[in-house]
Image (cartoon, rainbow, N blue to C red; front, side, top):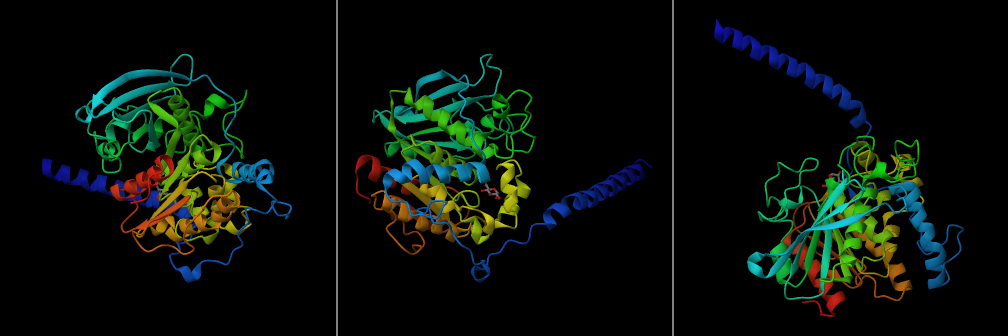
Length: 430
Ligand code: GCU
């Protein structure tokens, strides 16, 4: 009897699960059915026109570096602010840095670990972010890679002294789970420091109507969400990266003239947007940043504007929705985002199996930004065709496509360190 009831209950539960699944399918379907299947066929890439970064909006050619800096660059910047990422508020808010871990020994004493809390409100109730840093003892002041992490500071290294991240989604993640993406000891051994922050400290990554995270700190009286041309989550994450830089400026162990901002995937989008806006970053590194990062949107290859806006409606500004299934109407493309970084060194990396991020579109952004780099007197990109697998091409613009999947690997890090050694330490590439 008992067994029968159990069976009936199980059956009942199974039935309600089935009903729920069917209901969910109907709720989810209409949204996803609007997204055409991703195109992975080069011959089906639409014909498109790419705006020339060296032509003013009125069609006249940029006639020199001064006009680039005073007119064309600001024009491009406002296009990205208005149409893609939304404006970052320029208002200064109260920020207080409190060092919670001073130079403790790490990795057998060859490095130091520091933790710094950045409070953004006077009452310290939140939001706040925790910066975790590892710096080699042997180099002072040291160049540093700054990047956000996906799963909490304690996931970047298997080190019990890292304060456990307790904000959104992080607390249950095992210590050291992302240490393959963050080869900290190796970076230290190569003479560089690392500073990282959990991105959920700045803005939790889900569509909550912007009530959590840092956005509300900037609302005008009566405002409850960003306006259609104001920042989304990527803008907020980029803002957080600049606040890390603010702290680094105050740390005498760090060489603030040699700070590279780095990010993988959605955090690569944030790193590139941070590097474009904040020229204090001396180098920018995009690892598999894809759509809304450095891949050209107008190719509509892999992830499209409609696909990204549908699945992640909180990442960009509302105005970006105008370009769903309508990329050709964009008055810009992501090569112009790369051009905003010029003449500072930028490295773009793709992975061969990461078709969703459109590796060739990422390369083309480097190729079409090259004219701005050359215009400003740098070497730009050293190739005119996408290099073969695992054959990095590094000049002022660096690029590689490695074998394998969507990830940031030790191979990638070694190329970034080579690149940083070349630009920061005048060391020739190996
Ligand atoms: C999804 C998203 C990408 C993003 C990636 C990531 O795949 O579609 O745009 O780059 O997540 O952040 O891992």
